[in-house]
Length: 162
Image 1: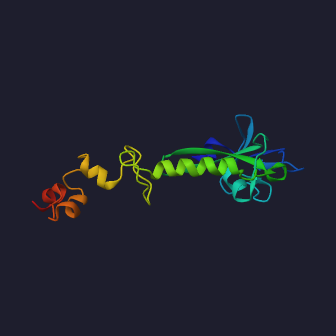
Image 2: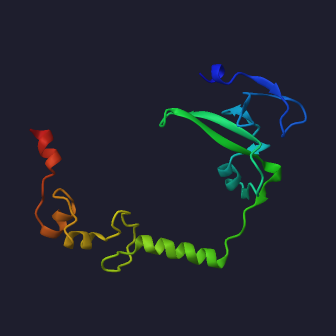
Image 3: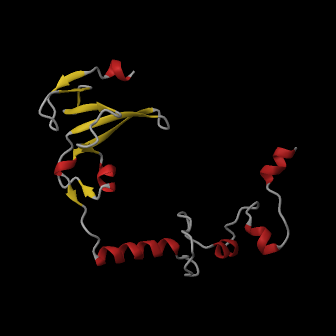
């Protein structure tokens, strides 16, 4: 599908003095297949970040396409020139405090205010003892075994056994 949809094309590109083979253009940018982009000159945002860099206001110079098996469709990634990228800004004390406050909110029970070791579920942000006392447990939830002391059967297991 890729070769029929995006045929090879020899054209001038911003990262080279000589024309290179691309897969044509898409949204006005040169289009490259997965694995064709020169790794020493072009990088995605995530690749720049792992190098300690950021795009720094530059526009993408090319697009890379690949098929995502999970989504079952083509995905396009923007490629930036590494030579024009700027270093990542250092984390300020204020930004560090704001992130710490946000993470503490994810670990704090909204019912009792207890700080938990793990991040609480997004839907209610309530710790396990409060979930039990509020009646938010399902009949097959494992917490019934600890609180009541009697083992319970999962109704899904009963259906599988019958």
